Image (tube, rainbow, N blue to C red; front, side, top):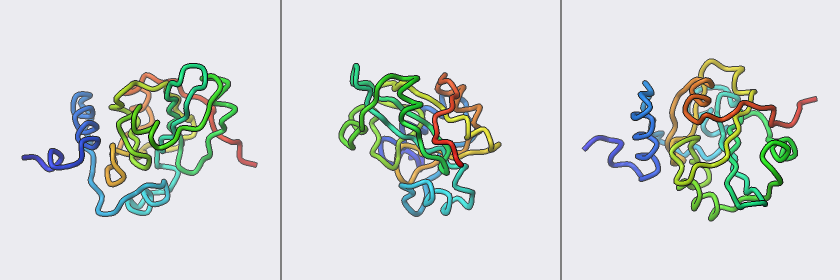
Length: 164
């Protein structure tokens, strides 16, 4: 049995999706949980901006999940996202798990149970290499920002709070 086959279901789903996409980097299993961008950056020895964090919102009009994949050193501007995707509400842990199949802290940018409305933060393109959650707080995978576009088909947008 392969190592990833012994891992939790969400991690396996991401590993299978990456394999199907012919992505050259299999997900890694960290010895420590990386539920925050800072924890992931520390575990990987990269800067926090290289962490592609997944933030889920609940669209009010139809209860759809809206996924914003943003740079770990940026804060999502809910008004900017709402202007693109429609009025938003908060997504609790139960909503996130039901829609994505992943627990908060391990939401991957792909392999969701139900495809979300997805937006990619343009700030991720400051980096040649980024890291995203792989379906579990201990799982991560390496990719380029352009891979996110290719894997998700999502538009790149200005979705973060402008820094002063």
